[in-house]
Amino acid sequence: MVRAIRTGRVYYLNARAGGIQKRTSILWGRRDVVVRSNVAEAYKDAIRDSRLVFLEEGAHSPATAVLIDLESGL
Image (tube, rainbow, N blue to C red; front, side, top):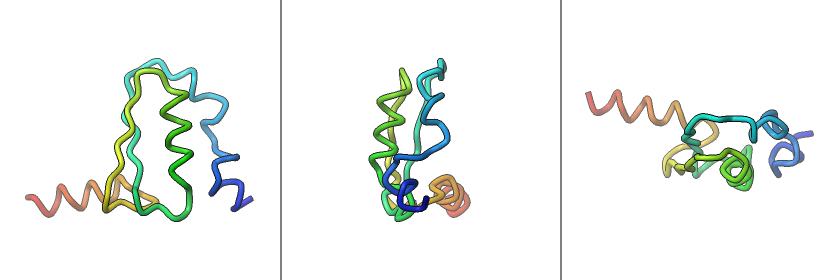
């Protein structure tokens, strides 16, 4: 199961991503060692009007990295 998740063969939005109708930003941690970036690319391809943003310092939870960056800027 872990191998399938890491390679992108199993992920929850797989079947539903194409149904997303809103402009979407996909944030992905460049240092994610749990789920490979090919999964991010698959989301980008599946979700119409989406953009993929790699966070260079981000890992598996890139939103946390963004919050840390925001807090340090205050």
